[in-house]
Image (tube, rainbow, N blue to C red; front, side, top):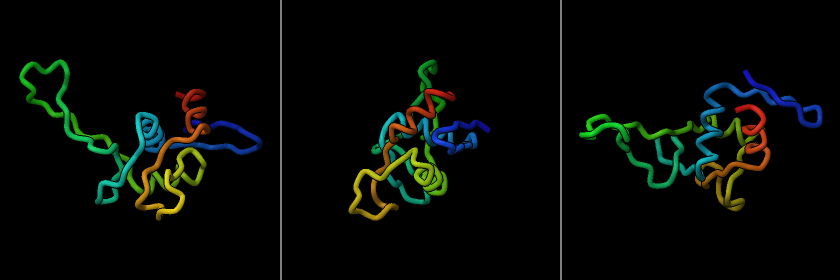
Length: 104
């Protein structure tokens, strides 16, 4: 577990939450159905070192539970305040970026 202290607030993240935060740092997370969130238009890609493109790399995703936990900590935020939380894209906040800089 990793932790940080900001104004007497300690945030401890699990490895799953850290992966979700890093995924959000790469781009906004959009709902994909089936309790999954990933980048808009994400598709399977192939390993760069694979000459014949036989080994696809899976699309990275975060679950709704992880997203809600990170939003509760203030590390992610909904990009459309008028829309429902489960339908609006989520982006990383400055606090999330600072947490990643300090810990990973």
